[in-house]
Amino acid sequence: MKRFSRLISNTTALLVGAALSLAISTSARADDAGLFLQALQEKAVSQLADESISEEEREKQFRTLLNENFDISGIAKFVIGKYWRNAEDGPRSEFTTIFEDIMVQRFLPTFSQYAGSDFQITKVVKKKTFYIVYSKIKTESGEPAQVLWQIKNKEETGFIITDIAAEGISLRSTYKSDYTSALKSLDGDLSALNGKLRQKINSGDFVPKKSS
Image 1 (cartoon, rainbow, N blue to C red):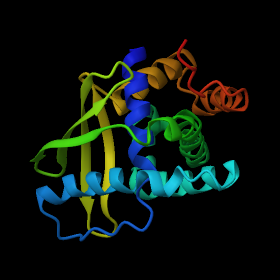
Image 2 (cartoon, rainbow, N blue to C red):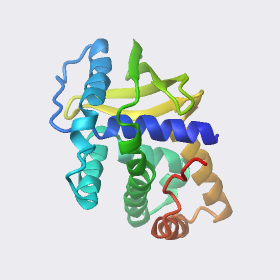
Image 3 (cartoon, rainbow, N blue to C red):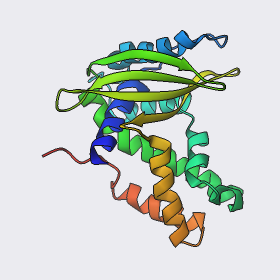
Image 4 (tube, rainbow, N blue to C red):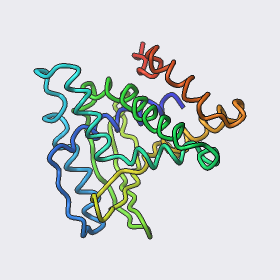
C-alpha cells in the first residue's frame, strides 16, 4: 500500500501541474485522451517546476490546475459513498473543500521531485462513458510501473481525470475505504469527519514522508 501511495503521488504530481493553457477539443476520439495526458507530461516542467515563483504562487497554480483537470467534486462524493446521501449540504460542501486541501497537501510537495520522470502512454481503451489510458512511469527503484487513468470527456469542459489506478488499486477506492470506515465509526457524522480531517491538514499529516 505504501508503494501504491508513492506511485499515485508521483504520477499525479507529474501530470496535474501540466494543464495550464491546455485546450482539447470536446469532440474527442479515444486517441485524444492519450494525447491529453501526453501533453500534460510535456508541459509539466515548464508549468510548476519554475524555481523563480514563490511557494504560495506554486500552490495557487497547482490548486487551480487540480480543479481544472481532476473531477474533485465527483471524487469527493464517491469516496463518502452512502454517507453522502444522508449528509446535509453544508457538511458536503465542507468535505469537498477539505478533500481538495488534502490533495494539494499530499501531491504538491512531490511535484518538483518527479516532474522529470519518464512517462509513456502505452494504450488507450474507449469504454461506454469514459476512456482508460494505460501508461508507464519510472518508479523510485528505476523499474517501470503501469498506471491507469480513467478520463471522461465532458461536453462543457472537455477531458477530466476521474480516477488513477496503480498496482490494481484505484485512488478513489483507496480513499473510499478509508473514509467510509471512519464514518462508520463516527455513526455517519460527516461533520465529525470534517473536523478530524481539518486537524490533520493543520498538523501537516498529509505531507508525504521522505524516503529514508
